[in-house]
Length: 339
Image 1 (tube, one colour):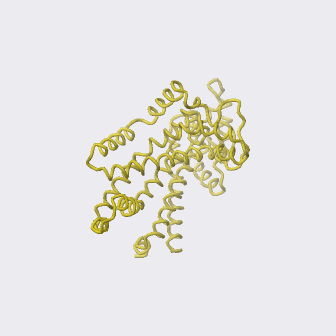
Image 2 (tube, one colour):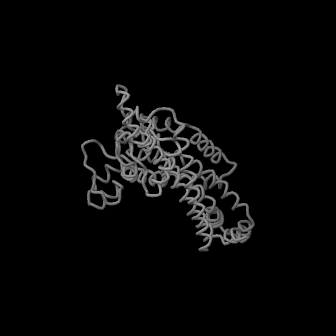
Image 3 (tube, rainbow, N blue to C red):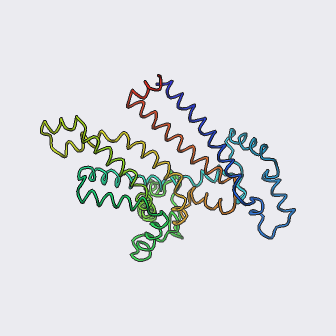
């Protein structure tokens, strides 16, 4: 088992290095000039040249690539040309907001995905199954920004159920003491119940929108895996012994279909931590997604590279953890790796 874990860790390291190389190449191909964007449209040629020297943009591409990897080995993601601050510090400052939103959205997606997928599998071929599958296709094919805008207009502006999308807290309200990074939990830890409710109301709508957007992939996998398990020999044996339909559904169907669902959950979690750029921007959520959007507008290459690398590392680590989890659950994974 230890040999398998070391093997997966080595592959993860190679993957991260490959991701870093691809990120550097792609960002170099982006149109625009970081020094000119930082200097402004009225800057002189001398001011732009000075910024190039300051941020190392005057050097050749191979030299920039070498410096990029050298800094990475020291944990340095460079300096933002937009703010002049270290990219690593800015990402770490914004990461708790993204984690709070992602965890809340993942909970919503899991509840919707498991419940809807299980009901659809049990009622397959019926109008209920058709309706759930139709809603799933509609939710997965509709643009995320359109769903978010409709939610803001309807639930915020028309009904007033949620506060305006202006961030983690309404204006004029001080945040709680920084304990865990989550405003909801930190408010509870510090005994500020009203602030926890306020934070939860600001978190609820973007989390519901993200959960609705990401739930269809879980619904599809849960439905397919549950149907496969219900059609298996052990499920038919349980029916022949006279077990109830509910018992067969949960003990033989849903329980034995969770292994492939874990892979989908890992992919969804990685997407939520790095792919919710549009949602964070629309809801003014101060996470790493909004940071990447602002960096793209200002052609801030170091910030874009830092964001993309962080997302890539998250994906690689999640996949590595899932692979190790499979090896712990299913010994055939280790035997195949050893072979």
